Length: 475
Image 1: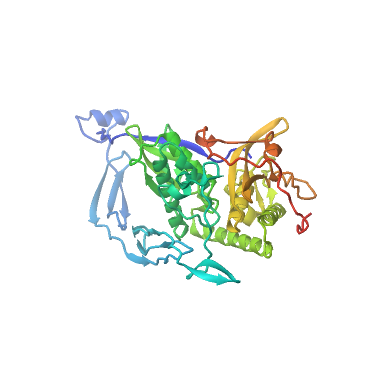
Image 2: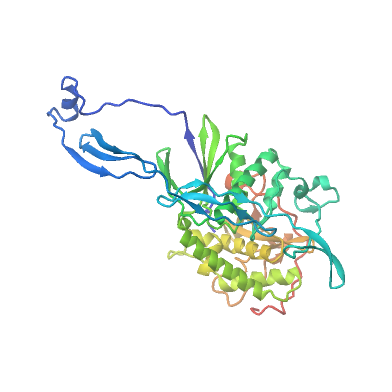
């Protein structure tokens, strides 16, 4: 996979400066008229345009001359917004909610924005299930999972003070196939609180947007002579942080990599600066998903894929069986996405879970994100890894996965186990150990910056995962 994703740019913004300009038709002894019109006298010829008032802009009769001069008459005040109520969604102990909002029925602008409501806490009670006492939520029926303390790199520890999940500055509930591995890893870095706070802001913005039915309007900016076209779903205030540009990029990259459910996120990060300091971060979606109808169709396809995978896993009791079955499920339904010229596709869907769910095609990023998404939904601990793949004499940007089975970590590369033209699925990189991938896969690290930054990965197991393929219908 060539690195389509993760390009960065900042827009420099200084204090506004007001300038007065010369108008061609100002009469200064005829000098300017003659200067701007090749020495010829100019007579205004105005064209009338009737401008209708909008919710926020006044209407008028606008008279414009080709020389640039203009005037208005019959000013009509802006009509104001026609507010309607947008229904909210109550939070439960298993799903987040959304507050009630208000928007204009004419222009669609929200006058009262909907706010994200965190999922409620489970209400656990002691129950006897199949003769065994367990703590079960009296509302949704979820069983309480015993927590294992882990320090950086997913190393088990008995010391609670070393556990990021217990001590992080912000509490987030992983939802819908997303991971929080990178979020917790920031706890062990410099400026930990601010990095986790920025991540928290991004997560809340995306969870709120994920419940929205709104289209996203296009915006443009000019920086260094280049026009930037983007679709912001939210704007995050950076002025409250002391984070450097590399810190901001690192948080954004981690968030982008480990949240496959937010497939609509754009692969470009940029922010505004004011007086040399980061001021605002537009969190953007890809233009292909700006319309709600498109996102709804994608959501339905993704939900159908997840349901089909869950049915396939019915009766599977071990994480190893699930991990192998999901590996095969993705490989069976997905082909590598090439352009007509034989290059890796740069289409947005080819780099996210829509490629697997809707198109049946994708590059390594789609394979890896889909594997994390389906594993996480089905209770198998999984993270996405970005880095470089080495295949013979060539190398290119690549993405794959790590999974945790029985307290040990293994590598999975569904892309390389599904080579083009192969008559069957391979298992060379299903549960691979450290030795298996040392020469062919090089992961990004916390020492990298920008596109090369990644959270500290767990140490891979010394031996390959033992697979039982007897239940695999694709062998």
